Image (cartoon, rainbow, N blue to C red; front, side, top):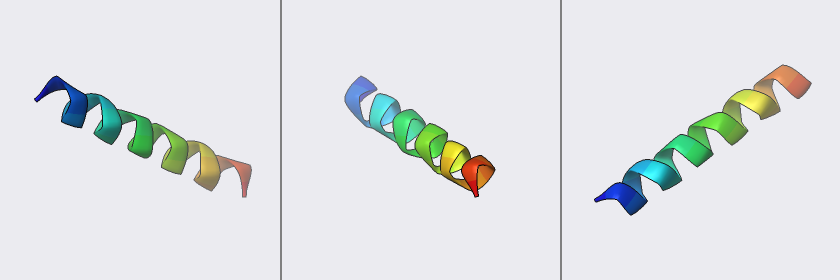
Length: 22
């Protein structure tokens, strides 16, 4: 359960950083 949450948060964070970089 927690693993899915952590992976989702990491994916969202990396996506936001990717959007900011571009």
